[in-house]
Image 1 (tube, helix red, strand yellow):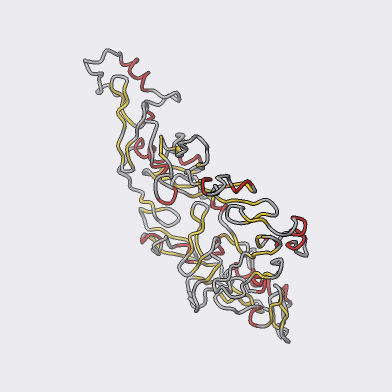
Image 2: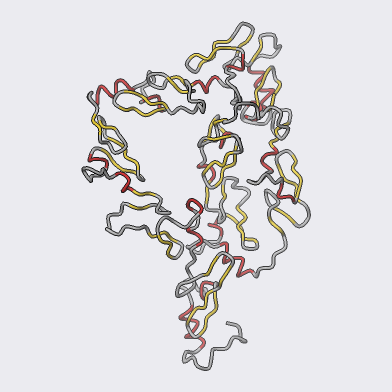
Length: 412
């Protein structure tokens, strides 16, 4: 308390005794989130909610992450307490998102019918058993099952499918539901290998100049290259063409187009937001989830925002003006354990600005690692979406864990 905040005359504690009762082990008074009155913390109320606890150490909005709502259990001091009324521990996870009661068989009342293990509500069956709860037994031996599902490279279903009783069910990414991109008795054929980078807007395999046979292109006369992308009439070699298209990127045409005789054609076709000699500029990166370019406070230049005076941030989303005190600002940037921006960013006006040197750090409290997002063609979210807290948020018309599936029937 300041000298103006005198201890009430009715209080029998000295100022030192009062502060001692309000002080957390780290030395902060009421966790810097309230004021001390006669040894009792009176906690702050912010826009996000009220702090609580004997030393104002608790707040519950950290729990409001899972599925856009408070955790599947009860939020206590920023941590989820799961509903395990019988003390069996079947409900667990950071947000109580895992419920292993889903694995219990109705008839036997056993987890996975005693023939498998349950992980986060899903049964993983022992060899020779299958079904949602491992309730069905295969009519062939586990050895025969493995033999039938093993692909020529020695992997079970080529690591592209699931083996059930000697038959592979391929992880098909084709949205049409027809033959699909992944097929074969052991899922050994991956037709995606025949598609030019980013050419997922039609059934145009092998750059339109060949036939795809089990993931390999057989080129028509006059064409060559892994994906039949290189004409024999081109004065450049395949390697020279790819190098010319590559520029400073690790991939030809920056992974945003196809290369033909050293020239890049950027995708999506007709979308001028992707441009540049090597398709190096992707102005979609300047848009937020609502499609606003640089938050309306700047202009986009080759995928980077140039902000107006008074604004900063990757998407010009932060105003340099702030009407909060430093204490109020810090209180909104601290995680439940009291660490500011998870130790991976700085706090400005109650919002965390994650370290720009660590591009993969994101989240309201810089708690997420976007390197955890799925990749396809070596690109996070296949370049068809943005990585948000470890999950791909796909742009309109795209789907899949890595935004690799084009849902439209025509060019976007």
